[in-house]
Length: 358
Image (cartoon, rainbow, N blue to C red; front, side, top):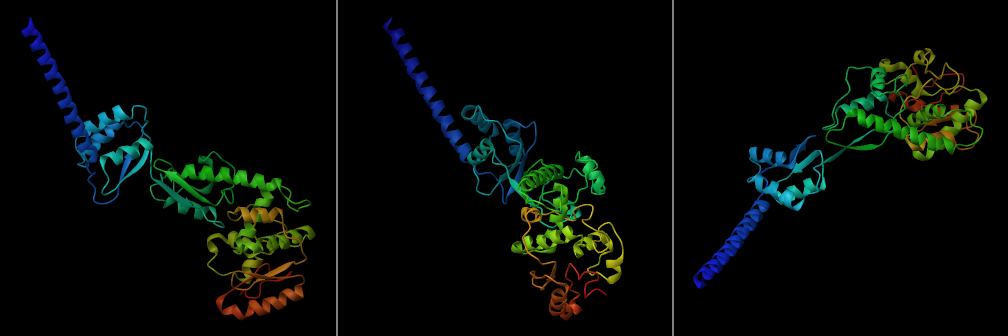
């Protein structure tokens, strides 16, 4: 009986030692697996597509020769991160990264985020061109589609695209598309325009948010000097109030379309288009570019004053005048001497064309 007990005790001791030995071996093996470097010589993208599992992702990395013993890493995920959800997206594999760091990034959902910037004053064609070249942004819109077709694809049939998208920097991740960016930008403009319109001044000549958007787009195209926007808006607001034509070159240029080659001639100023504010009264039918918040705020809260004219100095700023006589003197000073550079100011003198038009 005593012999049997001794044998049993011995077997128990051996079992314990065997269990401890196996556990130690597994611990050391797992530690070695976690510390192994991911084999990349330069940053490499790892795309986790919808439907992916940790096991599949790790197995693919092993098949590609990036890691070894993927099954151990999968078990570690099961043991240590049982509640983790693998987030779809693009992850970055970098030289010197360990398998443990890779698992941490997958667990944290540290996907690569890129950005695309839509610039104040751009027209819709420039917006489309910018999105078309954005790195790893899915191109879901047909590049040959017309602007009207693009708006229909966005669920905005009948909406003119110009000025309806807010200029800003938009972040995106793997799997997002140009359509996603446009919809976010459109919604952002709707929100900003509504907010600005609620804070408008009294007795404006613009009567709807859309008219404010049109005016803001002209202001955006007229000056790149933020502190001048209110004064530019004041000139246009006073002209609208008294029925004076806006006579602003950016609207002429927009109406010319592809015919514009960098210079406006007298014949262009006289040629009627829906956007030529030298020949039409009031505002053009649509915006001509994307205005930022500053231009929108200026359009609905113009600076008070008496000026009806302005002329560009050539450095981005303008000289403002109350009378046609003062304006013509400013034109002589700042424009005529730059005729060789085909430099123009706007609005032009009332009843006439810009001095440097050919």
